[in-house]
Amino acid sequence: MDVLPALVGVGYICGPRVSSYMLGGAVLGWFVIMPMLVLVGGDATMFPSDIPFNEMDTWGLWGNFVRYIGAGAVAAGGILSLIKSLPLIVSTFAKAMKGFGHSGGVSRTEKTISLPVSIIGAIIIAVLLWIIPSIPITLIAAVVIVIFGFFFATVSARMVGIVGSSNNLFRVWQ
Image (cartoon, rainbow, N blue to C red; front, side, top):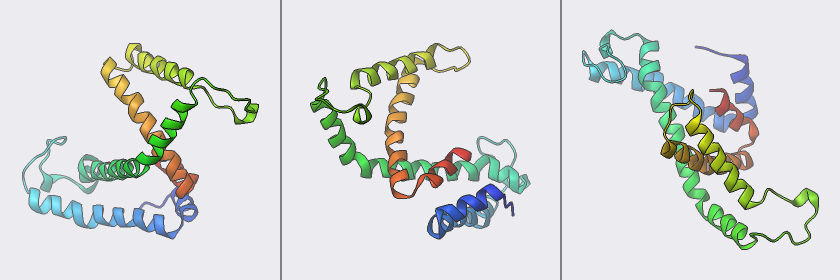
């Protein structure tokens, strides 16, 4: 068992419900999924590993398969949260479009970045992702990254509002 002080602290801050979900995922991965992979997989191999299941050690199973199953579960949770947030996203976007170009005497502390500036910034980020040689992606992939970034920022903001910022920071640490 690997107990890191930072993870214990995050578990304390997140509370027993969220911590029990994380513990449940770990127990499911280590005591159900990994033995099942060895039992069912036998001497077969599967991408990304070229070692048969029954010859892999626990960390090989975890690193090649269980970690990605957990990441998929987190992504599925994010997508479901996005679907739940879709009415809020649509209404907020509609309000932003309605107020497009109107400042309306709002105080400095209540002003946000205007929609044209946000769109231009997103386009610049997509182009920079595309043209920087150390980031090998196409322009279409860069645009998809920016779009998913917009939607998952919404999911992240919703998560901060519901659970608290500590759980959101935990996802960054992983």
